[in-house]
Image 1 (tube, one colour):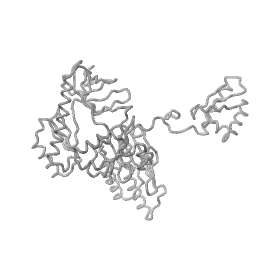
Image 2 (image 1 turned 90 degrees about the horizontal axis):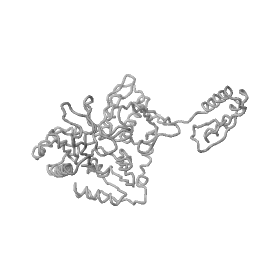
Image 3 (image 1 turned 120 degrees about the horizontal axis):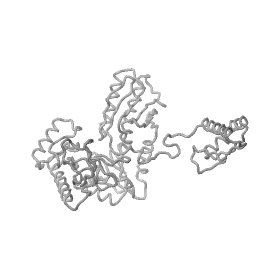
Image 4 (image 1 turned 135 degrees about the vertical axis):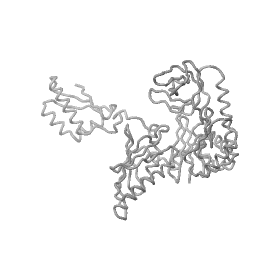
Length: 466
């Protein structure tokens, strides 16, 4: 059973894709950090770097956008250009833009600046591919390019014609706005998150769409009615005074998607660690012992892990290189089944992932295309106390640091008493658990040691007062 839960807030809107009671994808629109990808602009070229074959373009935001130029280009400083954002800004770098414009519809993507016709590689059936292509050949596409989306499967000529009608209308409006006024200007913005998910994800297989906002509810009804009048019966308005995600019991799923450890239904678990270069996932049997032999127990655990790993990768929006350390399997047939099963689960994700194979050390290599921000970037920020290390000072380190400071004071001052101001966390350690060691340090170096608690300090902080 599939459903979409639409949680609309003042500053953040979220759409949860739920399947059989579990959240498999989460789409977020953060109004405090508005996304530009897909937007189309009239820009002004500010600088052309011939050596880099690149230009920097003012599109009306605080940072100039980066445009990669093709060989033989005739772009000049001060020139107006029609561009589209294809990659968001990162840190101090502006967004990346392209002159290859695309306007997405439900079944088709219009490529006004191209003339090729491409088809989604997720449509595998050769007869279906031929059927769709023959329909498109009978439709006037005005010499423009098209991408046929996965949602085009089983659709008829009238569906494509209606989709194209809206796309041509959008393109005409973009061209009209481009002729008005001067300077940088936004010409087209992609749909808000709710309507975008409905356009890109919703299919007749979905049982319902539940939304907690009356205005958004009406917009969804209007959009679905245009697609198929029967779909409006699938939309439900939820009481705005209640927590939608809490009511449908998916908050636990979201919490797990932010945790390092994720338990599997059979008692095994996976560990997910993120590094600068890659994400590493480790599979452990945990509490699962199984009723079969060791090889079968390991294989069954790895199979269960495959499904959850694919779900976590999709939900967390993990991208780049992913290394998975499955529990060691002796049989080659088991290894091949795991690789095949993992790819099957990953294929359910719209973002392309590829299982590259298994290394000599038994590690499975996966690569996934970068798309949007990771889930944790929306809900978490780097800890100001541990600077992202995810740990506090150990007792050993605290005692050692105190001794080193006492040695420094002994050598460079004539103090007979040293007073340290420290956090509540450190104060409890030195006053309770390891006070005897502090006494030994004090006696050995002949300096009285005292501590003052300051609850406003960061947990790892300890400061010498005198």
